[in-house]
Image 1 (cartoon, rainbow, N blue to C red):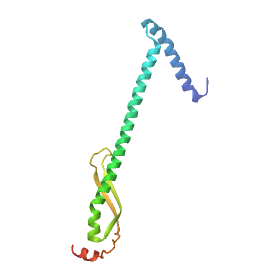
Image 2: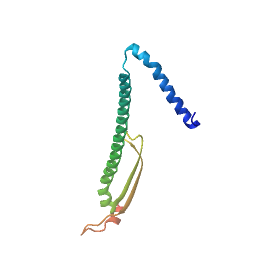
Image 3: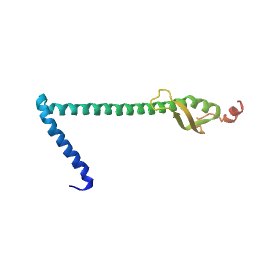
Image 4: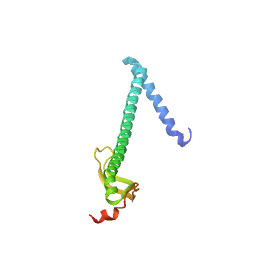
Length: 138
């Protein structure tokens, strides 16, 4: 007998050979072609592989859509406040990070945290510095 590591595999192969040897006369009596059985088993495996592949692709698409929605939400938030910040306070958004909660495939994720990095807005030519005046008018 082979070593202990290969003994399990040898028993498995010998068991399969015995099963085939015992089933062969039974299949001949029932007039069943063994090739048809093997093709049927292979077809079931192919179908399950296709289903698994489709599930994986679906999950990848959902994750990509969630990432796109997340990015669009951040861009939309930035665009909504950009002009108001510039006019009122003379500030511009240098960075915006939105943290959401909920599953990735959720249509409307809830916002957990918004981190905004502000900086001085670039002044257009001929524009006065009205930051101080506007800050006190609140």
